[in-house]
View 1 (tube, rainbow, N blue to C red):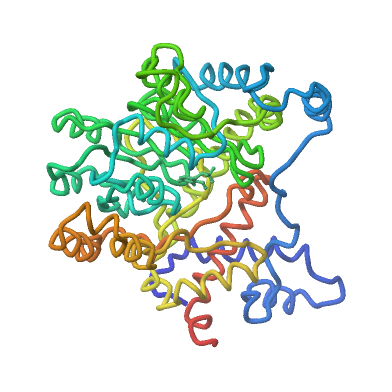
View 2: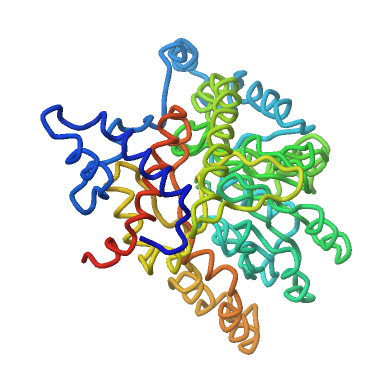
Length: 451
Ligand SMILES: Cc1ncc(COP(=O)(O)O)c(C=O)c1O
């Protein structure tokens, strides 16, 4: 047993073991039951959790008439009229407290649109969080701009504002903070740096529906905010996205760009069309999203309550560090994450911790890895376009700079995450998560020895 394990934790571990007794067959003796219940499932003991977890995504029969209505109307695209997409835009803007919302085909297309409208162009640089889904990098590269990575704060998993200014060059055009896993970035210092250097800020809020920072919703804290409604998200429509903003002229420009460049509202361009693409949402998607706004609010509260409960329990376990949140902020936990210190688990590697948790009936994993070494950026900077747009010394310095991302490396190596649907389970299931981690901590020396 780990020397650091307090008596209290041991007692809790034993209590968790007794809770697991309920799962065991009636013919075993009480002594055998306790020993088996206490033993990690990976070492042949009884799993703490055998009840499964809420499925995701979930749908309701009550949604069917609205979807059928779209089908039967024949108006499936907003280009032909129809109410569902504009109604969803109005409802989502209201929910977030934004003046405007534009629905898009996906989070990726929302980000591509927002970058274009904020003036990101070929040969520019954009400062972005490296700890994100790969789409965030790609939406910058697609504009033939360089994603320049600020470091990640290991305590928060989000962009460390202190690492931004040293990365600004005369080419820098925008900053893209990512509210990853629904964890709000510390936006005040980020916005202050952007203001000082006259840079645009686009929030990647693709995982942060209803997350809050200082009383305002993420996605409304900068020039433009971008959301995803892809299948795995808290409010899914298969594919889908949105851009939120308070400035009419910016959202009109987004609307024009996402609609093949058609002149829109305050943005008339120089003729009927300007540059753009077709990134429109379909009414089917909007009909699904409109049904889910109340559900999103209710489930967000449930995830928060369960995450708070887990945070309080986990901070008592040596080697587990719950995340730090910016002052006066409320996350929404697209992944429930914490940091893992193998040294305090008798050297039990994180991968084996995942296996041990899986055996206890609790799926978890490691979140994002150091994706900048995966080849995407090497391929981009070796391309003809980037070679024309940036000098060889700049591209070399850029590639070398990945080694400076010490905080991000630490985050990639030590984060443990559980999918959001686990947080929709009952409080007793949260107790199982805590019990499993305590059990693994108590038996970490033994677990570290197995292959
Ligand atoms: C942080 C982040 N940014 C961007 C995206 C892209 O969104 P989509 O998959 O809707 O294109 C996602 C979606 O997974 C995301 O999680």
